[in-house]
Image 1 (cartoon, rainbow, N blue to C red):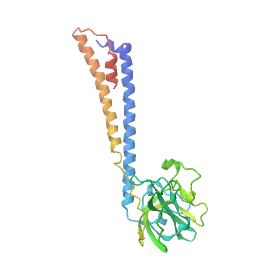
Image 2 (image 1 turned 135 degrees about the vertical axis):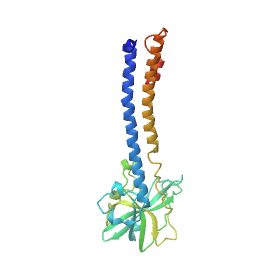
Image 3 (image 1 turned 60 degrees about the vertical axis):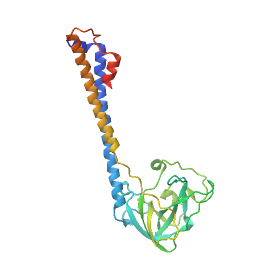
Image 4 (image 1 turned 180 degrees about the horizontal axis):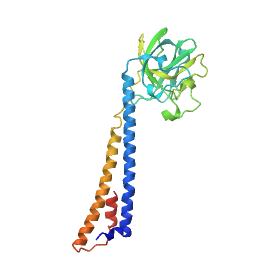
Length: 267
């Protein structure tokens, strides 16, 4: 009764089903791994943003890159702005508007400073026109903000290029910005959220990062791939049982599933 299972076309179907099952298992496990990774990242970023501020020097120092687990951690630092070495960052749209980020070194002690992203300003009349940038406060200020690691082409997706107008950059990279400065820069930079004393006029604040929904979509995809396993096995069993039923009732059968039936079982 079951010898038809050893015919070439049935054997081909068995092989397809046996290959599909481990493939779907691996795809499901990969999606579950992405779910865990993204959920952990979302939880870490949210916790760092909501945490109470800590002194900057407990997490970052000159010549030491910011750790992945410290990104977006709320920090506080006191110093004096150095507007003579301020730059703006090109191609930083905000709320659908073209503009720049404003970077100003904050000198925190003898020979040390940190880059502060003071916020966003709209673009000038042309691509080469300098934007209008409010001057930073004079004297000592206390900055509270999100700690960020330096941008590179790899982690930002932004391609750096030479030949920009003076005082403009494409990446917020502490190592590059430190070239020619009279002090050492802390690895990474601070994205300003609050400042004391508050200036009368300041760039627009940079919005909080969009943490996103975590890995919920990956979890759904993982469950979907594993459901496909049941569909493939169920279709394979259904074709076998139908073939057996036809043989028992004396129905004519080709001894193998049609191409359409084989495809349905595999999918």
